[in-house]
Image 1 (cartoon, helix red, strand yellow):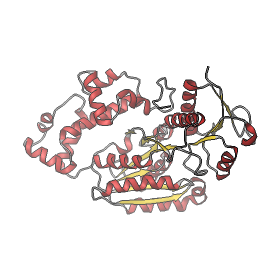
Image 2 (cartoon, rainbow, N blue to C red):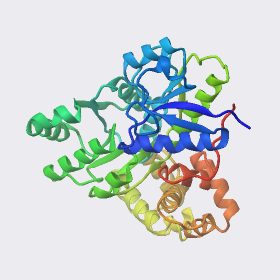
Image 3 (cartoon, rainbow, N blue to C red):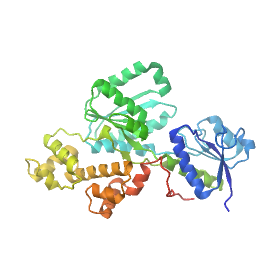
Image 4 (cartoon, rainbow, N blue to C red):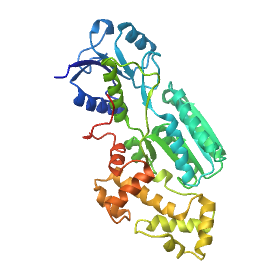
Length: 397
């Protein structure tokens, strides 16, 4: 029988994302435990007041303070940090891969034809992590010859103290940018604030301003008008990988030299980015037809049949405007539709395939994995982080 472990858990049960991390921790514990939990506050099990006298096996969670790191080192106990703040160099961390997050956001906007871009962040204590997203986002855009406007505003508690001035600063920033523009925000709540500012300025979303959030907090994303597109962050998987690392440390493994990074989940497209930008009239007409009929299904010949142009000339004009062939756009619309159905409905994968213009499950699954990098079932799991998951995470112990 496996040895029972006592874990000091630094999790705030009132925080939505920290609760999601706990679902991953508990999933690992169910596979490799048993684990029992103590906490500093007594919310989970016994209260931990002195790590040195505590006698447990490991510390896990959002370890944000240097003082906590010093106590962990003094106690000689295995520990893993999940937060973006660093309690000390001797406490390893499992974190989100912010470099990849910035890159996929940039490519998402580039694929939709945007040439003007912006980044909106907040000066929270973990601003260094937000800078990583910003730098990778802007670097990817610069490779295509694009620039990016950047605005950081005060953290939420400070923002409210002078809300009128801060809102005016946001309005002035939006007003100053050439349109159409695509904006990446560091949190869904910041993105929601952008949508309010666009409404106050009479700017159309997504035609004038496309807005992409991060975190995919479904309550926020579906509450906003228009609904907010967002980058999923697989908090449950972060918790799972953090628990797995702690397990290895408790078994005597060496501390890793760098943070363990968990890749972002998919981008969930909702109304705030659901548009492709181009100035060519014929290409816009083709895009409208593709958007309406891609799942019928259609071919490039069907699209050309709607336009007063020869196919060879059309494909040249389309590539010049969007830097991709028209068939790729048909596939993109089908995949967007498939992603939405997988994320927001209970349709089976076979039903999703049929509704997206694929003749069978196999061809759909191959195409979906080629376009997104994951299988339809994996995408569904990643886009629903709040759900209890039955499939075990993949990790080397």
